[in-house]
Length: 140
Image (cartoon, rainbow, N blue to C red):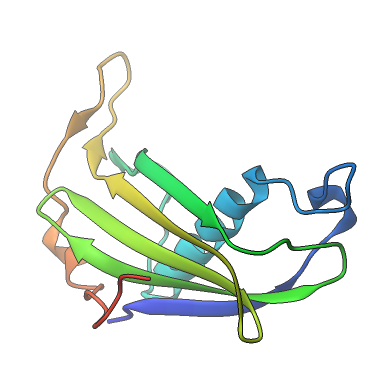
């Protein structure tokens, strides 16, 4: 049962703005990339073909502490910070060595997604909930 996932990444040129600094929108992509890797680590896919449930983002935020520039390598840590019957909350830390770059949170809800019907929050299936555990000290 994974509770966190970590990977190293290098900033690509297309991720930067005119000042050569990573555009803020990429931080959310890095966090989502880590989320999907965490699910794969648990033997799951967050969006398997034909799934009747989905995981829309209901809250996401980042606080920025240091600039990140083209060609720099950095680490992304994603941790399961909390689970309710219908949601999973993650915390995320991006760092370059000892330098904290950004801290963020992401909350996803489990919903039924059926054609021509509005999404409706449902309980996380037990076979999915059992694959994750809340990380000790998960808050960044």
